[in-house]
Structure formats: C-alpha cells, structure tokens
Length: 433
Image 1 (cartoon, rainbow, N blue to C red):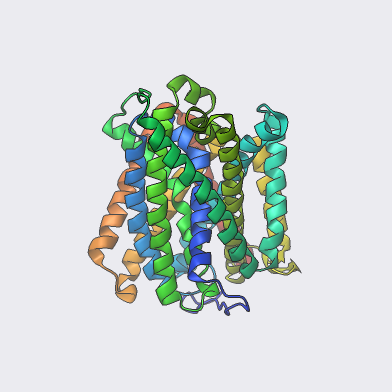
Image 2: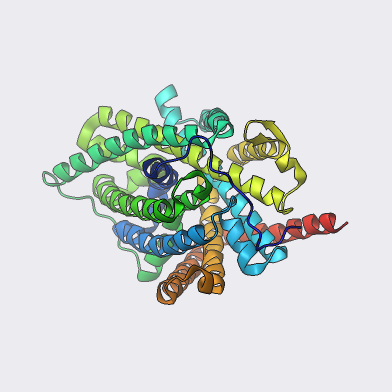
C-alpha cells in the first residue's frame, strides 16, 4: 500500500478545463439530480414549505463546499474525497469503507438521474408514461454518455457548457413565465410541514446539491486550482440555490396536490402546463432530458476518476487499472453494467432515499476529516464546525422522518453501510495475502 502522505499524481491534461467548464460540470451534476429528479418527491413531503427545504440544504451545501474547496487546494490529488479520507484516517478500513460508500453512492446517483431521464423521455417518445421504455431509455443514456467520459476530460467540459447553457435558458423561461402567471391567478394551496418535516426534507433535497463535489474531483484538470476550484464551487452552489428556490415556488403554486401525487417524477414539466400550455410541457421536458443527461455525464466523469485513484491506492481490485480504451478500464465497464442493473431493478424513490442518506454520511465524514486536517488546510474552525454540526442535524432529521414513513429504506441503508465495511475488509485481507 502507498503512504497516505504521498499524493496520487495527476498530471494536467493536454486540454485543461476552464473555470466556466468546471463550474458548468458542477451545475450539470446538481441540476440534473435536483430539480428534475427530486423536486416532485420533495414537494410531496414539505408541501408549501418546499422552498425552505431547498434553502436549508443549500446553506448546508455551501458550508460543505467551503471544506471541499480548502481540502482540494491542500491535496490536489487524483481521487478527490478518497484522498481526503486517506490523509485524515490513514489508508485502511475506515478510509477505504468511506471511499467505497461514496463511490457506490455516486453510481446510485447516476442510476437515479438516468431514471429521471427515462421518466421524461418515455412520454415524449410514446405519448404516455411507460415504465419499461423509461428504463430502456435510461439505460441508453448511460451507455451513450460513457463514450465521451472515457475519451477525456476536455471533451466532457465542453459538452457540459453546451448542455448547461441550454437547460438553464429553458428553466429561466419557465421561472419568468411562472412569476408572470402567478399575478393573474390564485396560487394552489398545499399543506405546511412541521419544522422536523422541513428539516427531514432538507436531507432529501441535499442530494440536489451533492454534485458540487465533482468540481473538487476535477482539481487535477484545471491549470490554477487554488483560484479556480473555490470560485467554481461557490459559483455553482449560488446559482443553483437561486434556481431551486425559484422553481420550487413555481411548482408548488402551479400544481395541485392531486396532480403532484400522480406526476411527481415529472413535476417540473407538469408545472409548465398552467403557464405555457402543452408546448411549455414539451419544451421543459426537453430541458429535463438535457439536464439529466448532463448530470449523468458529470457523475460518470467523477466515478471514473475516483475508481482509478482507489485502484492505484490498493482500495479497489486491480481490474480498475486495466485500461481498455482511453480512460476506460475493465472495472469501469463492470461498474457501468452494475448501474444498468440498478436502473432496471429499483424505483426512483428508493434510489433517492438511499443516495440522500449515504451522501449525507460521506459528506459528514468529509467534515470530520477536514476537522482532523484543519491545521494543514488553515481553514476557519468556526466554519468547519458549523458545517459539521448542521450536516449532522440534517442527517439525523432525515433518518428519523425516513424511518417514520418508510422503515425499510433505513434498514436498506444500514445493510448497505455494513456491506461496504465487509467488502472493504475482504479487499484489504486479499491485499495482505
């Protein structure tokens, strides 16, 4: 095994990513996983207070983004969060298990966002929802976007700028039309959630912000990481907070509870009907396809980079270092096959619940790691401590409300965490032999 103090080298590529391309990649990961995949589910839980859940989780994400920025600058190594765990806890079961949890969580997020893509694509292709075709289309977008990701980061960044620009223009149009429409009709009435319910929903909506971590993962692909990475993280989070809060208000004031219950997976497109008609529904659905496609694109980029780093550190089997073509390894191909299996087995709600909890757990672990390394990053103890405390509070509320509503989902999360520990222990035992 390598020394945790020895960085995993990551030479700057021939086509480095600019501030705007890496910011676009972060926005692409967030918006694809957030508004189109989770807004409807969040609205069912928080009702009229959905925008508050997005504000709370955005605040928590900004504090977490501060830790990510400081850690990325101090440890500009290929591997991102796994390198932070190695430095803080040493290479072993704790860091390996946390890294494995994070890697599988990102893979689950790819499946989640791809399923959202299928949910929006099926009605456009067939004229009506169809689960089988939704899964087929979701699987197809993963396969298609795997190609540019194994070809190199420069192509990924350029693709993100185009995708993000188009989808933000569509969503901005919906927001403006929704605001204008609100002045001519009374808003739809929804229930108000309890403070615990809002905080629990913030745990779900945090997943909508989790994509900013891919910016830190790109630290080896930018020419001036000390300046570019923090700016990109805060630009991306700030822009997405405004977008999420605005669209949450539009959706809640435009869709009745009964319609929302029937179309929670395509809530944003349904919100366009009252203000823009059927044409608006189609346009926003197309925007959803672009958004979720860019989310899959960004998460694939991060998974490929992290799996290679973990394999080089001996925390994944060597198959993840055996290149097949460009940046694609045999392990990555197996991982994509696993993602396709998950897409066709689990539904969107189950994936959202599991991914939200495990993201909160791993990001909380990043705060703990940063606290242990704060003498090296020279960060503000006050900000890091506030981030750690707020993340722990949101995680606790989310697990409590999830257990009250769907206890089996919490059991599944516990099994997933225990399974990750067992798998990492077996990998380490194999390496020792």
